Amino acid sequence: MVNLILHVEAAIWRNEEIIMFQDKMARKIPPNRLSVTGFFKSRRGELLWYESKIERDTYFLLDLEPRVTKISAQPFKIDDYTPDCQIEVDGLQKHVREIKFEERLIKEWNGSLEKYQAANRSCMENNSTFGFFTDYFAYYDPYRLSILRRIKSSARYEDDADGEALNFARKILEDAQKLTMGSLIEKCNTDPKQGMLSVCKLVMVGDAYVSVTPTDERLDAVLIPAARACNPLEKSFTLEKMLSRLQSHPDWPSGD
Image (cartoon, rainbow, N blue to C red; front, side, top):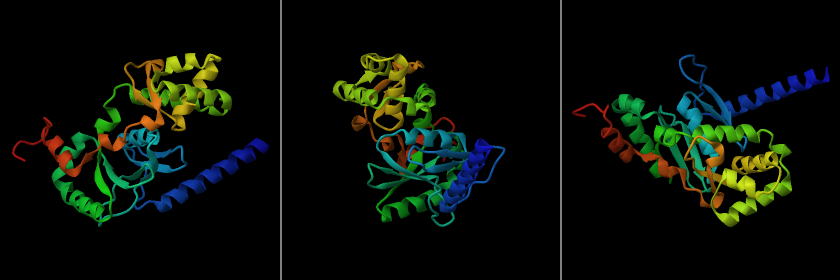
């Protein structure tokens, strides 16, 4: 009976939390059987609502970017247009981004260009930037997303990670500046399970960054300290660069 009450209270709290975050969104995302919809909870506690596979995966990847300090989904309206997200990098400037597959952008470009131009002007006037995250960001590396999901799966048990072992792993990585996951676990000189927990937690809390995934084997992933992580905006496109990229795409209509 006690467990049942706890589960009911947790469900009520979760529902209230969802409603609270929905109220902060400029546009509500309704359920849709034709696309992937739902919400993703970031490591900072933000509920990020998505309405496509690429939005879900982009939020997951942005959440593990050490330099990203805040993410907001459906943050505000610009006339009748609501951008997909706004992110803060290094706790400084805010950046507004649309998240779309490039093939979809090609199909919708002419009909959407006016609202993108208005968003771009508005962002410039408010000391922000406007641009796009596409499949280039989410899927450019064929192994990265899968490996990070496996790391997160292991880190579900991060409370079992010993604090001293975690600090030791962090120091080893900071001293070496670059190590594979397998090498870092080995250098931790501890129980392999404890070493895996510690290394996975380093990634999930943003103290280590998966910079290279040369194979689909998690232990081959190359880690660097968070301070050396690149700016994820480098893999996004401004309005001008997005148009140039789409025009070089084989599916771009000839004559446009």
